[in-house]
Length: 284
Ligand SMILES: NC(=O)c1ccc[n+]([C@@H]2O[C@H](COP(=O)([O-])OP(=O)(O)OC[C@H]3O[C@@H](n4cnc5c(N)ncnc54)[C@H](OP(=O)(O)O)[C@@H]3O)[C@@H](O)[C@H]2O)c1
Image (cartoon, rainbow, N blue to C red):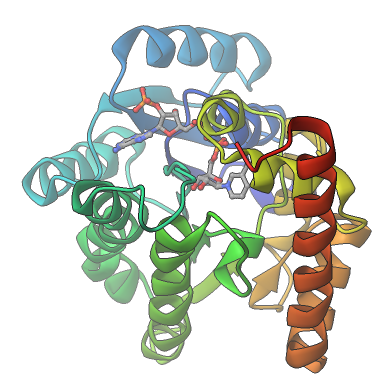
């Protein structure tokens, strides 16, 4: 695995925290040059210091302050990344966030913002580097979506819509870039213990939390194990990437038995509803 990344030039969106930071550190340890982006400068500064402390002496580590939902900012940042790294081999579109809530409780703004960051953010970045990858005739473009990009449950309508969108786009883009010898792949992270998950849990509907607690298919993974799985999967030929038996089971069940999987989710929902009523006398 580490040989694949030795001397490679990598750009990771949202590399200052969570899974993106985990991937950046693992890549630096594997001999890659890494640039990251995020909106907050102080976490970027701290992460680049960390990358320098674990990375190869000749490698480049730097960042750009960037909101991926702003197309103009992304285009300017892409030029800076290509100049600083002197090219690009692997692009990892990781930035994103989850907001859970019943469709009737979320404002129109919440749906649009999730699409702006999770879908258009990935799209803006991929298109800003597309000409570079076509001209180069090789490279990897990686999109992080979610297991909720192929199957969804109570309270995740807005989030899943943004993740299903990137899954659809990635499948078409894979064929377009295949003709230029560039690999496009989609990773479906499982529930991972990140600052993003902590924030998501703050406003999760109680019944969604209860469903998760009672689900046999939901396990919280560490940043390190998810980053390791992503690095192992990037060089292989498979388009879909996932980690852990729980993600594999969710992916396989939904792919082969979609109606049955929906029924399992429905029985988990009903069991969660009954437990919540017993505990609180209501769903709140
Ligand atoms: N953690 C999970 O359980 C889980 C499960 C499935 C899928 N995922 C997906 O995996 C990816 C990483 O999630 P995570 O939990 O590691 O997130 P996280 O802990 O919240 O970290 C997100 C990173 O993205 C940056 N970011 C957020 N919005 C941005 C924007 N508009 N422009 C540029 N950078 C932005 C953040 O920095 P700033 O805030 O400073 O911009 C931070 O560096 C996301 O796409 C998420 O949807 C996560």
